[in-house]
Length: 398
Image (cartoon, rainbow, N blue to C red):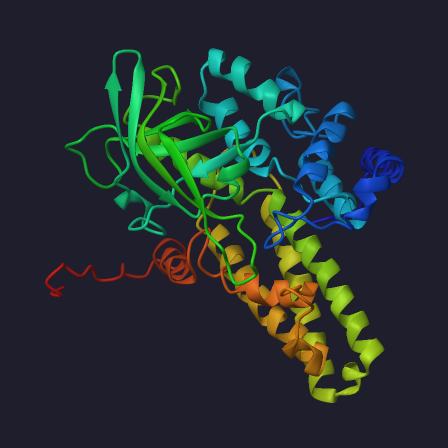
């Protein structure tokens, strides 16, 4: 694997660097790159304006085909964009779910009418999306979902509850996995619907987390409606389409996530130097180990992205999810240890430092996007070829 830029990639990198230098200014620069995981409600209005700034410069959806408003950027160029985006401390994106998940899914499975209606609004940053997958009794085991949709004339009527719906309170649309065959179970009989959020049949209740932010929500559908034509793919084939969406979640955006980790790492090391905590040999050893793991994770991610095109999520992707989520939790603990006694206090009104936010939010990362336990099952069964985990009946018998 050759990680060096080609001449074309070098020119592309310079273009990104120059544009970011000219546009990450004023209110955008004042955010200091904030707005990532665990901080997604910070400066939201400014970050929404930033989406329009990116769109005007042609920097949204760069990996999409040109005919759908993208640049048809190569995988290398998408990696470069994510690298330089983080280095420029550009604002955290608010259109990740539309650009990174729903858009690519529509490009592969959507009808021509759906592409014409929804893709331009994602490219322009005018419509934001949320994801209606998890339910109170269907998290990592998504096939257990119970939210149902019934066809009533030319509309679907949706009833049920979703949970952990990121930014549902600020989104215009939601892509919702529903059970459209009432007699079905597990993976069968599911459909993938596009549902407008601004309607009487939807109630969004924010979930206040230990970070005191509320980017996650409970979303209740009580007779919510969407057009019959807003089903992606075939009715009853939602599991296939839904898995494709999850595959895109494991794509190039992960690299930007890792580069954000590197920025957090550098800031924490600098803190340790300033307060003298880095002089502790045991802490220095942990810092060195954390850095080595992060580099291995970055290189492994780059290797996994080479040659990937389309909704492909090999079982090996579970290794990366298990790796980065566990690493970030350990890093959050290291960050507080490098803070020293200051880690035990916050500012007025529970004003958290970046290190506090990292530590607290990282508790969730081994759960969302597929829990560590589920990732280990996938690795064991699909990568190592081990026997599947015994299934336990409701009575407790194997």
